[in-house]
Each structure stands twice: as structure tokens, then as C-alpha cells.
Image (cartoon, rainbow, N blue to C red; front, top):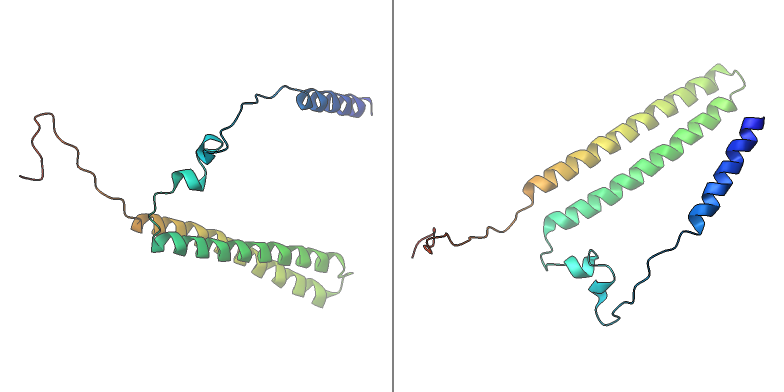
Length: 141
């Protein structure tokens, strides 16, 4: 019991100590949005919206929804196990619900990985030609 209070006290002290750590504050240029966050979508936009980008966004959104639904069904199956009160039919139903929810979650994770891999493979990047040290263009005259 004493260790519990010591750990709780240390956590509170460290938490309050981190809360009062001074932060670096700089003036910002309100006319240049990239001075605030140069990695934002506005500053890094190259104007190359591709079909692959939109396919990836749509597929990832659908897969996130599928994953969230699987987690909710897993919770429902857990509640079904808890409230079965030894009824074999209710236990079997909860087991099958849990099994199909876990299979759905695994499929969602694998589909997410496959979609991102395939879209990245089809992603095309422009070829840039740099002049050689002799000043001769490698492509031709």
C-alpha cells in the first residue's frame, strides 16, 4: 500500500513538473502560412493529384471503418460471453461472433497493408535529368 502512494506521489510530481516546463515561443509571419508549419499540405502541395492518391484515401477510410466495426463486434461478443450465464447456445453464439469479428479485423489489417503496398507500387514519380560534369546532355543533342 505504501509503494502505491509513493508511485502516485511521484507521478503527480513529475506530471506537475512537466506542466511548468517553459516552451519556446517565436513570432510568426501571418502572411506566410508556411512559416508556421512547413510540412502542412499547403506548403508541400505539388499540384500532382493522382488517381492513386484518391484510391488510397477511399480504401483506407473504408478499411478504418471496417476495423472499427470489428472492434465493436468483439466488444459485443465479450458482453455475450459475460451474460451467457452458462447457456451453451449463448456461449456458442458468442464464440462464433468473436471468431468472425477477429477474422474480419485480420482481413482489414491485411487489406490495409495490401492496398497501401499496391498503390505505392503504381505511384509514378517524374524522372529528372541532371547534366553531367562534361556539360553533355546524356539524352542527346
